[in-house]
Length: 157
Figure 1 (spheres, rainbow, N blue to C red):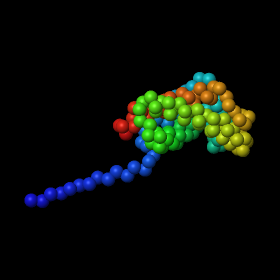
Figure 2: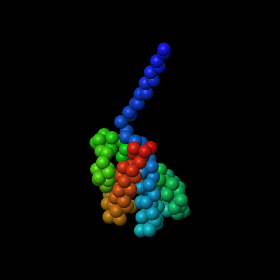
Figure 3: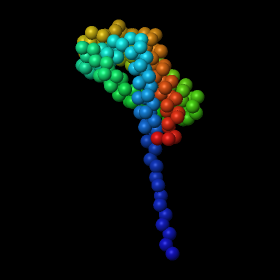
Figure 4: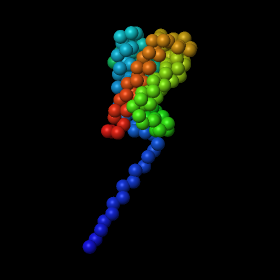
């Protein structure tokens, strides 16, 4: 009689569920993109694509594509933070999402983006810093959706 034993090893890279992070980040940035289009279309049509010399002229499709890609990257970083902070309940993930949305607003939207737009000579270059309240609302919406989608999908993906 012969017995075979199989061993499965899991290598945790400490980045949380990156797939759920990508999915949540794309969902959050899609909702945020809709808010931007409703409240200030030039941000999506000119400012965001200008980061990569994709505008002018206004190009909302390129702006949305860039924005979704950024959302995916920020979603992976969120997954890493959730793992690092051992955050796993829905409420704590929503709170972390809100905090992450505020952080992305304060650092990337208010500081990095205006500097970057100035460096590339964009006609949509805002002042530095650019702590615009509508942008804060958009980023909090991003964080809520990211945290909620991550909470719903982290154990399924």
